[in-house]
Amino acid sequence: MKVIENRALKDEEKMELQETQVRAKRIAEEADKKYEEVARKLVIIEGDLECTEGQAELAESHCQEMDKQIRLMDQNLKCLCAAEEKYSQKEDKYKEEIKILTDKLKEAETRAEFAERSVAKLEKTIDLEDKLKCTKEEHLCTQRMLDQTGLDLNEM
Image (tube, helix red, strand yellow):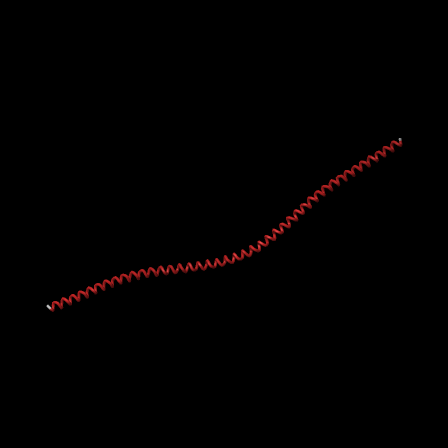
């Protein structure tokens, strides 16, 4: 019986060893599956990483371009502000010139109106002088005729 017991003990030990090996094999297979899954996910993530890095480089390039454009626009804005100040001063100067010229125009218009009234008065004076001259000539002619008539009457 001892031999059977020994044999049974050895068989039990073998079975336990086999069960342990089966469990270890299952654990190893599960670990292999998990490893393959993790490796597959790693490949996908690495692909995503490359794509994301490309997008990041593109975005960084775009940001640099935008920075250049912002600096350019800032320079343009400064130039426009300087030009605006310059043109604002010119505008003020031109407004002052317009005011002066408007005043001169009003003064010239006033002088022109006065000159026109003076011309009208002078024309009336000239007309009166012409009438006076004509009247004097008529008077002179009439005087001569009277004189002639008086002479003719005396001779008769």
